[in-house]
Structure formats: structure tokens, C-alpha cells
Image (cartoon, rainbow, N blue to C red; front, side):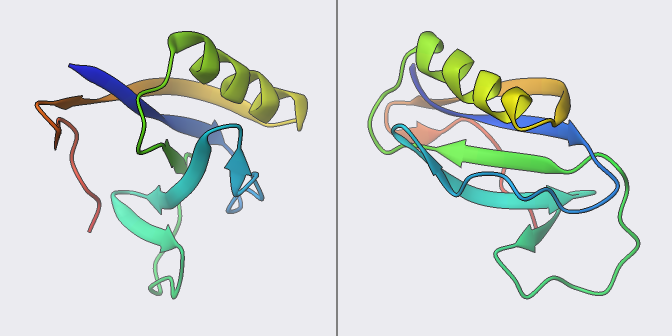
Length: 99
């Protein structure tokens, strides 16, 4: 099992303007209620104040690199409520994809 990213759930009434890249990570998507809203086009829907920002890296990353990313999000003034580390098992994603 190898670590390749993190889902950061942010408390924000709007779609957060988070970095598209940070260190080895690339912002893969932002979703709300399980539906992809970034990259667009976003569907017409009522958004909740708890979007998920998914950061991924093709190469294996460390837990310290995840911490640095979360600290960066915090330093931008966002309040995160939950983080979920994303693993691959034998090269296959062990996490779900949004709609």
C-alpha cells in the first residue's frame, strides 16, 4: 500500500480558490456532495459548505508532505474539517471517484 494523495474537506460557503499545485501535488478535483465541480463545467446544483479538494501525485509521497500541504491550505485562511489520505494497493486506487 502506497500513499499518493489526500482529500481535504474545507469549510467554505463557496468553491475554495486553493493552489492548483503544491510541492509534488496537483489539485485533481474539487467536489461537493460527491459531484465534481472543478475542473468545470460544474453542474447546476445547490452546494453545501463542505467541498472536498483532492490532491494527488503519481509518485509515492510521505506523510510529512501531506502535513505540509494541509498547513499550506490552513495558512491561506481556510478551515479544514477532515483529511483522508489516499492510498494505492498494487498500483490500483483504493479510493472512490466522484460522479
